[in-house]
Image (tube, rainbow, N blue to C red; front, side):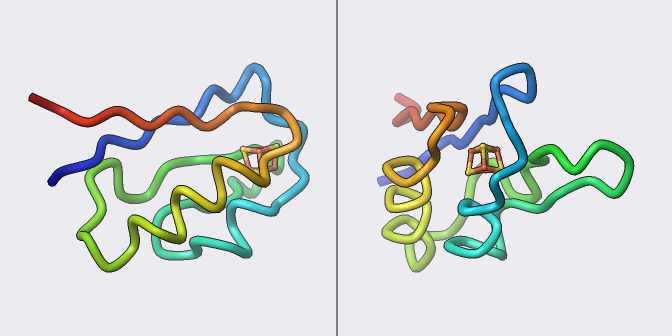
Length: 68
Ligand code: SF4
């Protein structure tokens, strides 16, 4: 099943847990240190990491959706 990942930069506080947890999917941009999504539709092997990153994000900035 697919998974669509988005991150709300307005909420991100740059804690970096998502980047540590799922480095193939999230990165920090160099200017503001806020989250960017590298891969909005990651392959299944990264889904568990992405779900964990969403749980760990202290700002509740990561949203996951299952596309129809
Ligand atoms: S874990 Fe949340 S607050 Fe921290 S960098 Fe990622 S999106 Fe931003």
